[in-house]
Length: 316
Image (cartoon, rainbow, N blue to C red; front, side, top):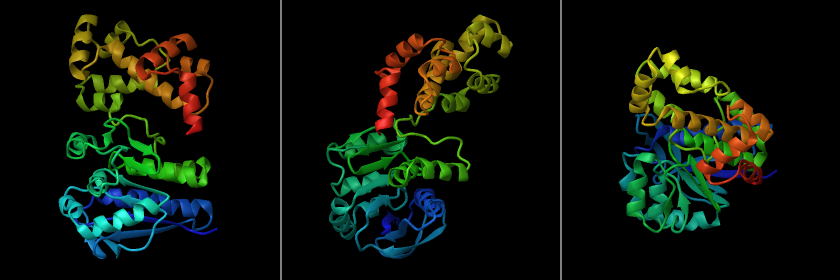
């Protein structure tokens, strides 16, 4: 089997994990597949050692040659200088159209956009840079929510660890879900995150902003979605009166208890749908009691029926 050549573009000041995260996935795919399916090359405009944002040096080959898949790492230090390089722009414009796939991790989207390679495409980048990317390059559409986006042969991810999620999806496309899942287990990932999953997890946001005693309460809610999670139950666990709990929880999370609980349940349902479980089973697991209630809430939040979402995921 001929090797699939992958180039990851690094440069001075690039984000280390944007390079090493996907690289580790492709390396693990070779091990899990039992043969070297991927020929991985780290390239840079000048070749040699490039120093990442955290000071760790990465050995690279000078740009040249034609990859099957090209990924551009993100970064903050050195990003503007990289975007302005005429030699890099010419090379990108030469190889990207011929590649089977090309894309970016995090702010690497700025490099591709500066070369005119993302015009008319829907793309992702780190949430902190979405507005700037959209303002600077109005010819593209920025998806400010998704972890990664696939638009034709263009693959772009939100940033840092999402490069690993996108790389796993690339491996799944090439070698199947079994290999991708094996890598995820080997990396001890909590879960493989699909591209549609929001950068803004309601659980993570709440854990970040909520004050005690709500941090532990939210963990308990996540683990007991099939249980009654009404205000009296939650207030009792928090040791507060119902009125005081409602006010303090809403202030801490930015959502009413009912809205927050529904968000946790629907996010869990969306993940379970991708695993092929019956809708009735999913409704019971997430505490929405019936397929009809799950369907109503799911369509209100995501704009489609659970069955359609599951079929779309299978097709993808």
